[in-house]
Length: 479
Image 1 (spheres, rainbow, N blue to C red):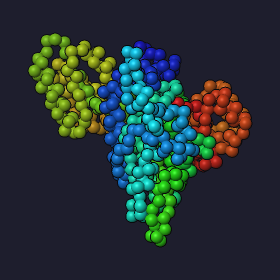
Image 2 (tube, one colour; image 1 turned 45 degrees about the horizontal axis):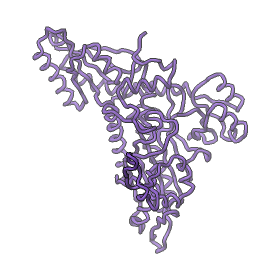
Image 3 (cartoon, rainbow, N blue to C red; image 1 turned 180 degrees about the vertical axis):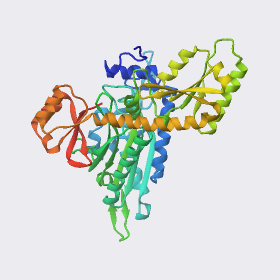
Image 4 (cartoon, rainbow, N blue to C red; image 1 turned 30 degrees about the vertical axis):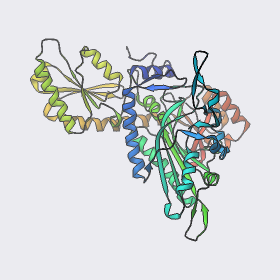
C-alpha cells in the first residue's frame, strides 16, 4: 500500500520521524547550528499545548514571570554542582559590540566584557538571586513562580523537537518554609505533568523517581515523566525536582520565621519543553503522516468542498459557511479549505497534517443536506454520513471518542512494551534478540560492573524507579 511518509516506521523509524515533520509542515532546520524554525502549523500546536499546561500551572497557585536571558557567570560559580551538568553545553557572550575589521563585521576587541554572560540553559541561578530579595519573612512563603521562555544548550547531536540547541519551555521555581512542603510540591507538579500528558496529549506515562545516578545535578530528588515511543525507546518528557536547601544556601534565600530566627528556605524546580511535541508526534503518528489528539489540533475539523467545475459555487459557499458556523458555535476549531487544489490533494494535505476529522461536501451532500465525516486516527479509515442538523452533536461526540481511543491505543501498546526481567542475563538476552521497550528489573541488580557494561554495549540507561515498587527500576534505550 502506498503511504505518504517513506521510509515507513517499520523500515527506519528515525528517518520516518524526520520526514514526518517535513510532510506535516511542522518545522525545518535553521541556519543556526543545532537550531530549528518552528513553522506556523507547528507553532499553533505548541500554543495549544502551552495554554493547556499554563492553565494547570496557574491552578496550582503558580504566578508567571519573566527573567533575563543573560546570566552573570558569577551566579553559576555559586552553584558548582548544578552548573557542572550544563558547563559543556553553555553558550557564552563575551563582547557587546561589532566592528568592521578587514571588510568583515567582527567582535570589537575593545568591547570585551569584563565578565562574560551565559545564555540561559536554565534559570535556577538568576531566579534564586531574585528570590533571595523577594523572600524576607514566613509571610512571603510559599513563593511559586513560572516562566515560558527559550533556552540554549549547545547540542552536539540535534534532532528537531527532541534535541536542539535552542528550545522553548516552561520552568517553575518554588520556595517553601519546610522540606515537607517542598517535597510534596515537587511530587504535586510531577502529577500535574502526568495528568496533562494523559488527558491532553493522550499519552500514558511511566511515572517515577530518578535513581541517584540519573537525578538532576544539585537535587535531593528528581521525579520524571517517561514516555514509550512506538519504536520502544524512552523519552523523558518532564521532570520535577526537590532541590533541598542547596540553592537556598548558595543564593541566601532565607526567611524570618515565627520564632524570630532566620532560616534557609527549601526550593523546587520543574519543567517541560517543546520536546513534548516530538513525543506527541512519535506516539500517535502513522505512515500517512501526523495524527493529533483533538485537544491540541489547530483545526479539529477541516471542511473540504468537492467540486468538478460546474457546481453552483454560491450554493456551495453558503452550505459550507453554515456548517462552519454550527461547529464554531459548539467551540470546535474548524477550517474550510477553499483553495484551488484538487480534492484528492486537499485530503492528502490534511491527512498528513493530522486533522482529526474531515467533512466532505459535494453536490450530492448539498442536495440531501448531509455530510460525510472521516476520522483520522488508529491507522484506519472510519467514514460516516450524517445529516446537517446532527453535525454539531456528531462532531463533538467523535472528537471526544477520538481523544479516548487514542489514549486507549497508546496504553495498550505500552503494555506490550514493558517487560519484567529476573536478572542481567535475561536482560542481555532480550536486548541481544532485539526486543524493544522498557525492562523492569531489581534496582540493586543494576549496581554492578556487569550492568555498566550492558549500558555501554546496548546504550541503555536507568529511566526511573517503579512508583508501585521502588525496589525495581525501568531500563531502556532513550532519545
